[in-house]
Length: 377
Image 1 (cartoon, helix red, strand yellow):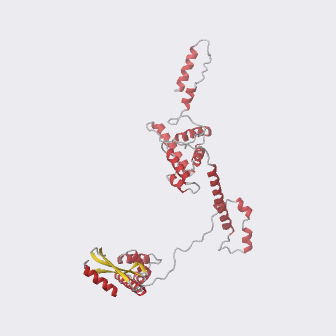
Image 2 (cartoon, one colour; image 1 turned 90 degrees about the horizontal axis):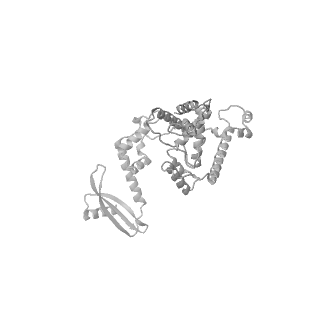
Image 3 (cartoon, one colour; image 1 turned 45 degrees about the horizontal axis):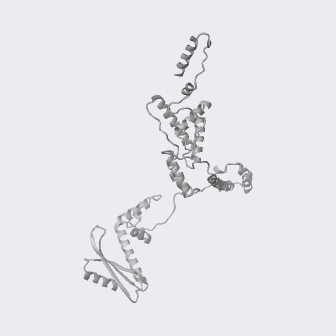
């Protein structure tokens, strides 16, 4: 060690006659560096330099130098994090909060202490970037697509080979960001003034006292308007509505069930769950809801829609009839023949669907009879 080395030199100097009677020896520079070198970190550094994102070894070098001078570990954590965040802000990469960075640096220091005691594991370099840093870069509206790709490539390089470096501060981007912050601050200030000048609905004092207690514009400028939230009136969590007893007969509910292909059992379960969610819970016995009721209501609604379509349809004087059949599965999973019948003509160039009929087979005679029956209807 350095103390043994110095002690040996002093003994040799004292053994020489007439020279260095007091045994004064100056330690060499290599001895001083080895005495101040920190395990796994190296020599402390008074600053973090370079044009790349700092590694954790660089961070620890600056931390140990600062804590040796100040002696206050907590303040050193804050000072170190502020210096490190300068590089990340210069690279336009969003980071976690300053408090989160201090917690991460504290864990790193505790990990270094455990390594110093055991000395059988190696420390790993990490960074303080947020896990969604790439996503935040892509969402930055102040950057052009080319700048976004450049920032993402730089961030990924710093987590790997670390060949890229920063050339300096982007003055154009800094000006854009400063203007954006000014707009946000102006908006917050305006909202804060409106919130402070708005009288409370429950205030029973006369109007004159309200005006006297309202802060002036000069006083509002002195306050931090960013932390003055506006007043929001919370609404009651429940709304009073009236529901029909024959709720399954509602056209909107029947159309939604057919459009979403919900079975009769499922629509009954949904309606029952909604009724039970009321306050107080609805009495299901007062409503007519059942699987059979839903089936009849939906079948009746389909017939009404079909009848309305037939009444609204005006057949052209001349038309071409088209039909085709296909095997499809019904609601119980069985295959059956279905035949679609169209006509096309003046006013119906794209075709008009007349019917989709069930047929016993796909023969030509069966399809012809089904087509004739649909046209007659």
